[in-house]
Image (cartoon, rainbow, N blue to C red; front, side, top):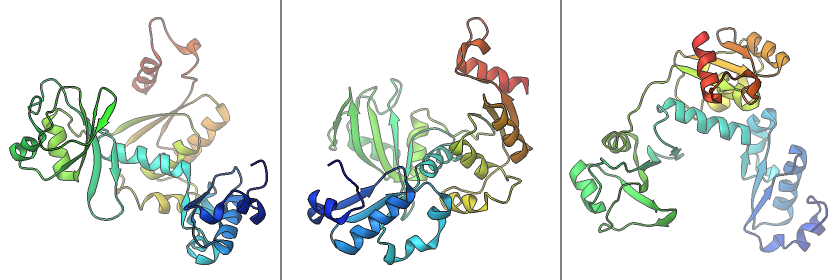
Length: 278
């Protein structure tokens, strides 16, 4: 339907009265908020979800008021930063999905050829490791299946595991995925997501980031001492990064352009060289 999404008449035409969810993801935070408010006021059935990029809106308690009719608020940049921070805090050993309640986690592991689980049914994995976990999904040759206890594990299988952090750490280590503390971090680009991540890893000098740290601190552990190296092609952004994070290294370079690369050097080689030079 080519029309305004914040019009009750248009929403009725779209069948909103029978919808289970209403998702507002326009480029305007205000339109998303108003649309969700209209839906909540006019229609009782849909669960409302609004994409809100403004940190003042995202952190405000006004969104917790049922008057606005918003069940869930999603800030894409913060969600991206959360995923990256989780990976850093857990040694970047696997993709990690946390649950709001309890200590359960969902992670994935690809079974190597030398894994002790190769050629064995799923039921023996728990018995031999004395671990309490669940294989929620198995990906074999890009085909997904829900395994049973008799499903045999092969090298190259990707297992999606559900369990506590300690149990999953044990399984990952058995398969050669060890947690390693990460102290030196290269961040290519100085945009919003990069600054969100650095705000949690570093203590910025400006006062405007306090709200952001409050938001992110709900989802990640206490920060440890780390060295951050920004690589940004925009000189003005480099100056801002240098002022905001005086303890970080900032390099004005474009990792995408091959004009900065030496012979037979890849973009990753360039990033490593810039880090080593510091």
